[in-house]
Image 1 (cartoon, rainbow, N blue to C red):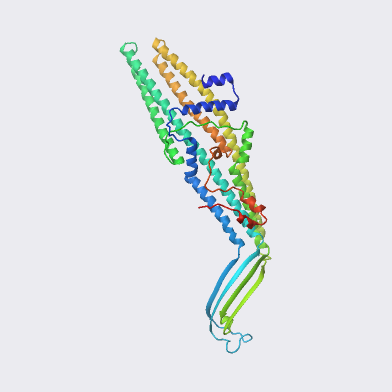
Image 2 (cartoon, rainbow, N blue to C red; image 1 turned 135 degrees about the horizontal axis):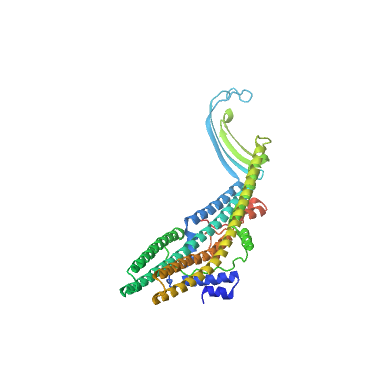
Length: 474
């Protein structure tokens, strides 16, 4: 029973029909595949883990993690060693005696000062929150890049399979025309056809060979794309498995995509960063309290002869009560937040559009595959009838050649339709940010979960995030 007969007799639901088509297609492309052929899973894994695009995103995550760890220093004391030396002359009769006044002396001084910030207007806390959000953004960006790379790898893999099948269709087309040419030669020799019939067949045979050349060139381009995306030459292919658990309705598809989209999660971090930047920038409007302690020793200091030393400890308060331009600065920060929110809404629309278009392409590919399968069967039956009638002398050679051309065109189109149907299944997974997970692929060698912003904000104090164990980034 053909796929068309199955669809017509049983009329399964869309999901069952899709599974049936996928199963048939996967079985067909797996015929005569080498035992060492690379599976789709292995090809996608190679693309995600070795492609330069993925490595660049991975480096961004590592850099963002290190930048977050760097902020630990904001909560630790600063220890300063300070020294100076030079010639000085003071004129201060109220403080200096006649011996020291207006006497040039060579002074030297060395001191050790420790500072610990007690309160800085929440600048450090917002720095931690912002960099934690940047790390989350980088991780979501890496996950999204992994989805894109996985989809590119699936497309490259299926395209190599498709061109192998198209080459087989073109080769069989040449073989059929060669068979017709032999039959025509016999009929011309028997004076049953004019000599011009040979020229008609030769013209069609040359056209078939030209078509095969075009397919060979396109196949070479597909293999070049495979090398660019996956990193090595294709070494045979295996059956492309069908995808289970696809949404049953367009609304479910859109809902899943919006809920799981890494792009949407990444853009949400931009809004958080804009708000945290507001806190960083306006921290100077609040008091700044610093604990200071130090020791100092020197000779001939401030114009006095002899050695002296001292130690001190205390709290310093700095508060900038007024500075021009603060109102404009606040409005600018508000606009940056509005910009980030508007950009996120733009991403929402783009994710929704991608989900809807993926659904539309998938549904259309199901119908297209079924209809083209019917056309292939009809064209094959017509061709067989025309051949029999040609042998019986009731059909012309031109009728047979036209039937061959129609069968070739429909079979050629059917291969691309089946490949498109298979690709659209994986495209639906990518639209839901589930493609890399489908292949059980770790998107990077950095074992981080994108929850640093929440952990930082939920901690008793922002610095507590640094107590969380983060594995080595080497």
